[in-house]
Amino acid sequence: MALLEIVYVPNPVLRAKAKPVTIFDDELSVLIDNMVDTLRDAPGVGLAAPQVNISQRVIVVEYGEPEEDGQEVIPKLYTVVNPEIIKPSRETEFGIEGCLSIPGFVGEVERSSSVTVRGQNRHGKPLRIKAKGWLARIFQHEVDHLNGVLFTDLATQIWQPEELEDGELTGDSV
Ligand code: CO
Image: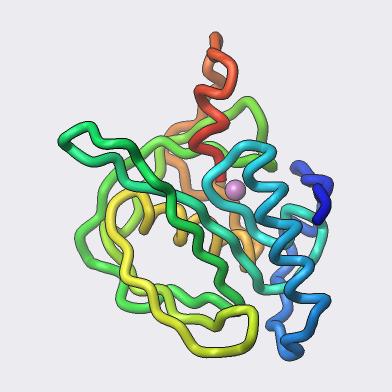
C-alpha cells in the first residue's frame, strides 16, 4: 500500500475524459487500495483516479450518513470501476462542496437528490448502488471527475472560507 500524489487544478489530467477500465488485474487492485489509502490520508470522502494523475474510470468513496440519534457513524467504503450515474432524481438539492484537487475553495452546487450508480467491482463483477443525499452528491462529484468536470464548473457561487479548523473542510472534500 502506498500514498499517491494528488494533483491540483490546472493539471490537464483533471480535464481529460478518463478511459474505461477493460483489464481487471492485480494492477487495478493495487491502484484501488492505494486510492483508498490516499483518500483516508487526505482526508476526504471521495477520490477519482484522475485526481492521482491516472486517467481511468475508477472512483473510491468512503462515507457514513450521520444517524439522527447521534450514534457513532461507521463510514462505508465503495470502490467502483467504470461508474455511471443512472436514474438521477428530478428532485435536486443544493449543498456546499470542496475538492481535494481545488484546495481552499468551496462552492454551492445543485445535484440530484438521489441516484443509482452502476459499475463494476475490482474483479469486473457488475454492481449497483442506490444513494441519496450527501452520498448521492459524492458519487455525482466523482463521476464528473471522470468526465473532466469540476465542481467549480457547476457551482452557483464559489468562495474561499477564511478560517478553517484543521480538517474541518477537508473532511468533506471529494
Ligand atoms: Co473532487
